[in-house]
Length: 245
Length: 303
Ligand SMILES: Nc1ncnc2c1ncn2[C@@H]1O[C@H](COP(=O)(O)OP(=O)(O)OP(=O)(O)O)[C@@H](O)[C@H]1O
Ligand SMILES: [Mg+2]
Image (cartoon, rainbow over all chains, first blue to last red; front, side, top):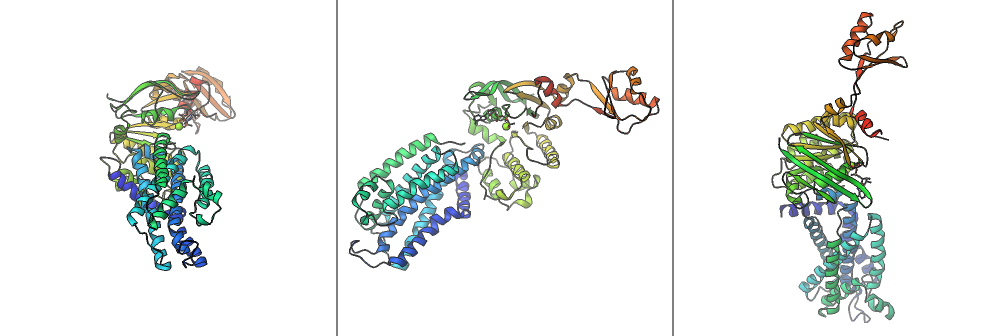
């Protein structure tokens, strides 16, 4: 327990010292908010069911943060740890793998949550964005989504040989998924075939799940099922294929 | 004598590469045990099995009475490990790293003292990435000692250190032993093994080719002793052939090399004194572990 606590604290400090990870989790979503907010404003629009553009974008940006952390920051830093021999050094101490992975997961949860809170507070203060109807349900959906994306990310980490390839592959998976999922722009305005394709992408389901709960439309069970499935399968595969070196 | 580490018939292959091929040895409490051999000999693989970081294909091991593979967690509470290839995060500070590692152990040492002992006290707030190679190495040694281990395994301790730092490190290794800690030292520096170790296992191609004290290993070589000097003008070195203990006399450039056995130096010096000669560069050449390796394998250790 003491080991996990210390490890988490050190990982927290390391996270803050790592400008790229901190930037994409904490700052980048705010940049998007203000850029698109200043372009489109938040006037209610017929096309979006009486909501403003920032209203719709805010939960979508949350999905984007989850995807960035789960598919990019998570696996890349794990592979860097493996590639540089940091995991080897930890393993030579009396440490169980859960302590190492546990500390990382805790930090990702806290930092992603912080990123989300910053985003929502800024969106609310500046653009008077509607706050979620069911904040606890949104929080639960956030936890499920992040857990299943981290699980998938750790599978990716096991499969990839080097940090360099992890970065390339993670980007090749993440960016198309980001644009198709609606996390970077409303899905409603996409052609129907594209919308159909996007239903097969996990990030779309994060977007749907959180968006629906945000606007009081209840749980999308299909999305819950997709994400729980990804968590269970990803978690199992990741723990079976975990490599120290 | 108490055995702290017992290895019997250890074998480990990576695919078709046989890294360790039937190695058996015992390490006694309180000694500095050296494992030397050329690159790729299987030293690291062997000690990683002992640490419980690799699973051997066959063979049995007991380390501090524990099975390294099944009781790895308990074992690593009690041993210190310095790995040949390892790192800690670039941005971690020296004090954070050692404080973190202290939290992994039930009975950690005072890390402030360790940092002082290893000359890192003024680097406390430096990040790992900003340390020099030698400072990193010393930090890894301090991390290996953070749990007051009964046995410490150091893999390539002085690689990357300059000669002065190497010598300083040797003193520190002796100091570790003075505290009662058994040391297993893996190295490909023969001189390091010779100076530092009580006993040495020479490993080549996954097998032990010799195991004894450095003194015995060199002694067994029966290469005899050689004395070298530059003679003054007009001295015919052939006259030394009749000196007691001398078997041959040869020339190498301007130098004379006298080979023989017994207290050769004393006899040669006496014979030279009879000729009123006292060459200032008169010196003995002893066989080294390098010669032992060459004699046993027919190869230079670094080829
Ligand atoms: N993880 C691995 N996978 C495949 N082969 C390996 C692996 N580790 C070591 N080997 C091979 O096993 C043999 C022994 O390697 P090992 O690292 O044990 O040697 P060593 O004596 O420690 O050498 P060095 O002095 O270079 O550190 C070498 O031929 C090496 O190529
Ligand atoms: Mg080695």
